[in-house]
Length: 277
Image 1 (cartoon, rainbow, N blue to C red):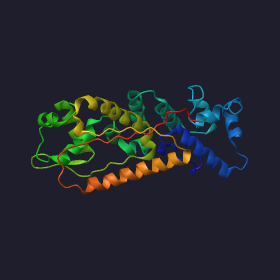
Image 2: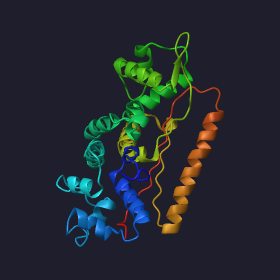
Image 3: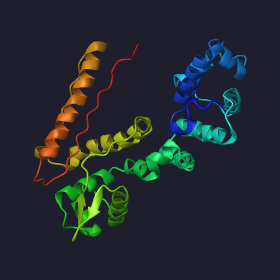
């Protein structure tokens, strides 16, 4: 195997690995092309447009095609096993299934999944983990899960609080104090490959919660606004940039806070109401 070839164990997206593999092959063999590559996999893969559809994420890779891709890329046994789990991880239909295959990927020494670790992945799997993390920014003198649970809205159990505390300790996001816990860092970042599949589940939890808050939180303690508008692609990109900039400004405001006494969630959604061209 070419030592300069992309290392599959550093990928969490099989499509990106195949693209990088093809780019690398082109650098060492000028006659290499997607047509010749697809010919090694299946005679009809290129002409049917299936290869492009798979690489663009419009089609999934079937179980019968996977070993053919493995042979075409000359993957060794351990690499082939990782590739199989990687495909199933990317194509999983729900979080439970993704959890399963992520754990399989994390068993490979030196893999990106192992580097990210199961704990960091788990942090984004339940809405109350980041909420309880922020609770210790408010109160460093409380360690009783029962008492902490009474302060969280929506309701959580003392067992969920205890579970969150153990996770936060393992991630070193909090530290044990004399009578409670203290936050060690206000921000947690994820690898770019990690964000896509987490974002859907993570954001959905808070979007659903936002609807419930309309009935359970008094108007003076919440702010809801909806703006429907028309714009161009250029305007859309400018708005996205402004949202990111606004989030960075908010982080600066939050970091300057010294006397906090409550936890809030700000959830912003930007989505189309017309079919995209």
